Image (cartoon, rainbow, N blue to C red; front, side, top):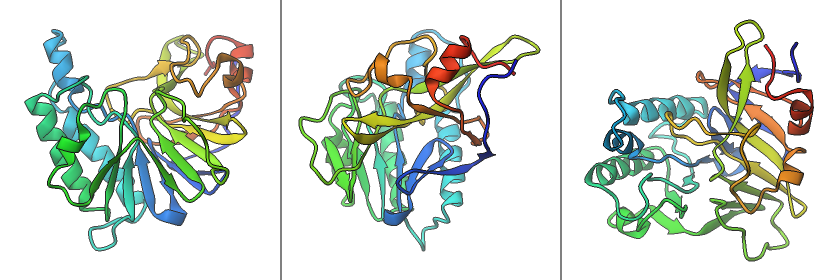
Length: 267
């Protein structure tokens, strides 16, 4: 039995407020701003240190996906974005960066500067000294949160102390949302990263998936919320937008409908 309705599928989907979901990124057309969250550079190195035998290539996969997204927003060095926002957790390791994380992070920022007038780095709970990382890069700035028109960007590991009256929507990361989908034939469950769209204190709240290609995410069907901006009671009303490995975005209904129908969505 199939639960939930796929209304359409594409690599770009416009949601309320003029925001666009593009693969694992969020795009703000009115401000030509691309937003990605939870990149966790150094994740591959951490796996190797823990004894996991995984092939090298994490950074290459991440850059390939980013380039695919940039091509969809018609961004070229001669027609750059106004800005790129890194919505927290650029690096994976808590505290000081390893030599590999430092190298990859600097290379990543320099690549972004080729496609945007500036890069905004927001502090996440994994990030160490971002100011040191940004040193010498004139168009890279570090913030705890960032306002753009009626939008507020923050990582989401802490709640905002206050909200300006003009803020209509909040965009956060941190949660690494994903949803488990069960194949009705094989019974196998596949975990898909997803966007969540709901409300927080009468504002729209958009929760971004992790941009890290190897971090699957936290299954909404089984795990509890991490962010203080989310509650178990309110989460059921959030709309779920899964993203495939190829970058296609699907629109499912509210999470409560999925939960009411069973532990996973049938194929």
